[in-house]
Amino acid sequence: MIATALDTLVAPPSSKLLGWYLIDARPGDGWVRIGFDGKKDFCNPAGFVQGGILSAMLDDTMGPAVFVMTDGRLYTATVTMTINFLAPARPGPITGEATVTQLGKTIAFVEGRLTAEDGTLLATATTSARLVETAKAIR
Image (cartoon, rainbow, N blue to C red; front, side):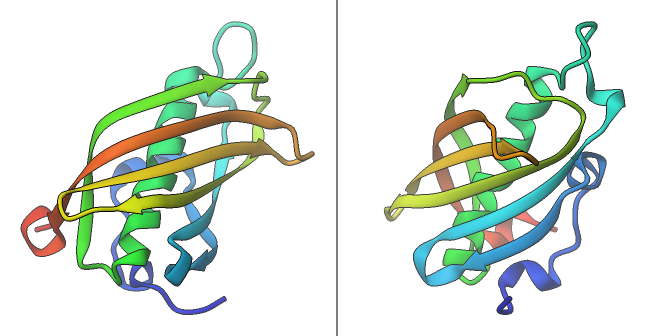
């Protein structure tokens, strides 16, 4: 894997909680693959990872796609996020992938997806995010 702007960023507590780790990235394409730990503690009464947790995983996949594409210069603040839950997520490894579909001057548009270890597509999402200079967003 190549070096990215994420290599020097200290992971925030929310990412650590989700078990976030970078698997692969193509900064020039605005694409990332992120791994998560779908912990049993994240499950609803039916035994599946709760939808809000999956939403957080998607958000924590799509933002980094912009961050690596801009070599860490731009951070995202989510404006809208639309999620489609396609299959129940069992506890275990979950993989997120995201691609920047358009990077404007003030807004980015990104598509994301989560898959289970067996390749089952769990959820898809799109987001529009306000672009903020990283130096102003991260203290």
